[in-house]
Structure formats: C-alpha cells, structure tokens
Length: 357
Image (cartoon, rainbow, N blue to C red; front, side, top):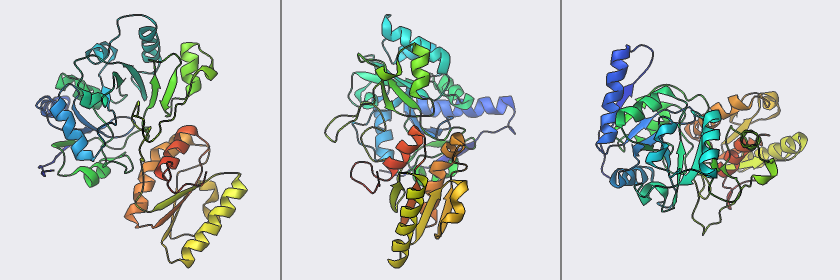
C-alpha cells in the first residue's frame, strides 16, 4: 500500500474543553471524509473507518493485512444509533439487545444482530449479520458523534500481531498506514470485547471477554447451559472477529503450559533447559507468585494469578515486550480465566500452532 503521512493527536487532561472539542472534530472530519483514524477504547485501540463507506472499510483490511472474510465491529455512541447498522423492528432479538445494552453498555460487550442492507459487505465480512458495540471510553463516543456515522473498527495492529493497548503499539504497526492516531494513554480493560450472537435459536458466545457467559445468562434470565461456544473450522466463514485466524502472536515460538501448577512449572523448566541447550533466547510469561521458579533470559509477569483484570491489561504489552527483547522461545503459564486463556492459546497458534493443550 502507498505510505501516508500519519498525524498523532494527543488528547489528555491538559487540554481545555474547547481544545478537546476541536481535536475530536478534526478527527471526526477525517473519518467522515473516508480516512482511517486509530482511536482508544476501553478494550484496545481501534482502527476506525466509516462503517457505511465500503471504500473506506477496504482501507482497513489493506492497512492491517486482514482477510476480507473476517467481519468488523461497528461502534456506536449509544443504543439509539444501533438502527443505523442493525435491524431491530421488535420481537425477541430487540428485547434481548435492549436488556443487554441497558446492563452492559457502554462497555466491552458486542452483539451480533441482523444487518441493515445499507451496511456494505466489507463491514460485515459478507454476512447478513453485523457486530455492534458501544465503547466505554468517552473519547471514542465523542469521536463517533463528531464523525456522524457508525465507525467500523478492528484492533489497530497488523493482522495476527498482539492487539495495541497503548499508542506506541499502534505507531509500531500502523505508522504510514493510517491518516490519524489519537493518543489517549493506556486502555483500561486490555483485551477485546465479549461477542454474543443474538440471531440464532440459542445464545452463542462467539468470543470470550471480561464480561462472562454467566453474567449474560443472568441478565437475560436464561440457563447458562443454553449459551453455546461455536467453533469455526478452517473452511467456515467466521461469524465474528477472533474466531478463525491466529491472533495476538509474538514473533517467537510460543507454548502455553496447562495442568496442575506443579506440572506447569516442571514442564516449563524442562522446556527452558532444552531451549538453552539449543542456544535460543528464552522468555517466560508467568504470575508474580512464581517468578523465582524460572531461569530465563526474559521474565515478564502478568501480575498476581488471582488478579485477572490486571493480567488482561498487561497481556498484550507483555507479548510485545517479548518481541522487543527478541525472544525466540516464549514459554507461558496458563491463566485460570477463559478469556485470557483463549488469547494465550490463539497467540500460541491454537489451530495447529505451538501450544501445549
């Protein structure tokens, strides 16, 4: 792709309300004109374009190197804007959407809904459904309002790389590929949103996140067992982002170790010894509680093994730091949390890659 002059726009508490409004109006005008803007959400930084502009959305796929059948999420500023991308004419789907939005929006929950015909296939990945969410980040919502359009946005990284949770990650992957990057500091959640499909006979969790299935089941007053976790095969079109392709991966070989804590420690230490004999630069991703048990060239913790929110905030940054340290063999402890474990396994190559499952 042709290189563009990427502008960095810092928005923080040092700006007056007028300066902030002018900055976001500028970013919104870039989106409205068909440009690409990287912006912060509470989960990760997003790579945004006008969700109703097919040509602009194609630029997202080009900038990321993203497969064209991998659908995007349309971001809206509030529930009233959902009708611009989704068909909610009444009935059970609308009732479920309203209930979930009332409890979890703005926030890290994405709903898959029937798509309006005005939404181009580029945004939906060719599907008749559309994934929609309202981010819990005021800058993101103000930007959407300034753009006067729903904003399609995957994570602002090159396809397959760890998602960006601070602006330096975005610059590393996307400088020269996008028109504007909004720098608003570190993301507060750190992993992508939960995705729930409301269009089938049963509720389906298409991607796990920090809002769990039990919370969704409770909000909708349905049994937890009625929520399914469909798997997408290599030949099937993904119903939502994060289902089919390898994601979040560091450049080095990565293995995730599962089992009891004793098994994990023993097998990981054995692998490190083999790596050293092979002359590989080694890295360990582990909990604070077990740092002293490992001998590696680089040891990065995700925090206490019981502090899952902290682990979520640190995970992608830790994987990028492994790359910065040129680690050749990344050895990771399992994390006892479904969404975080999902990210670790996909980073290790869940579909035929280096993972010890």
